Amino acid sequence: MAEDSTTRTRRRGAALETAILHAAATELAEHGYAGLTMDRVAKRAGTNKNAIYRRWPDRLALGVAAYRQLATTIEPPDTGTLRGDALELLRRANRHWSSPLGAVLRELLAAAGGAQHLLAQLPGQSADAMTTMWLTVLGRAVARGEAAPTALHPRVATVAIVLLRNEFVTRGVPTAPDDVLVDIVDQVYLPLVRHRTAG
Image 1 (tube, one colour):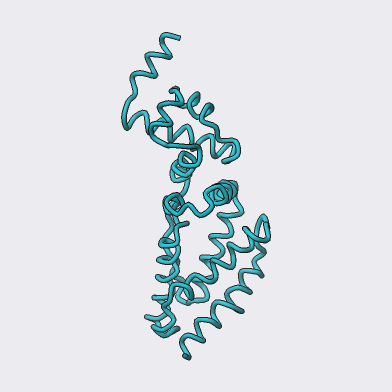
Image 2 (cartoon, helix red, strand yellow):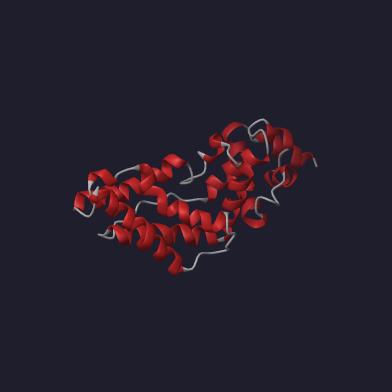
């Protein structure tokens, strides 16, 4: 017990924070957000709950920080066509949201509700990050002559991913069939872009 106490007092600052985040990320991956507890994280990190609460005010804030350790940043695709890029972005999102890590993300999004300060910390999930990704893809289409500059509007750019998210959040599907993704792109996204171009 004395050895454990020595171990606990040895780590401070960044080293302790790293240990807590690693422990929380492991717990999140193994048990999901529903199974994430301060007690288990403290035990796995070899510290006490007070050390966690000094850094993260609640379980949700810790869950968001832990998720950031697990998630990876992706670059916008460049297939050479707007249709190809849009489908690739939707397929990536669909694979992610359908994965175990995606299930954790959906739990965090539901728990965060409208807490924008927390949503902004989720990689790729903030409104700004999502809009930037889709505007990049649409901007390349404009540069290729596939769309007019008038199509470069944030709501136009992100309509496809919003419709896919709706499948998960509103309909509660575990994954979206590929024909749904194709339908979103061919029946909604591209016609909207073309309409803005024609206008």
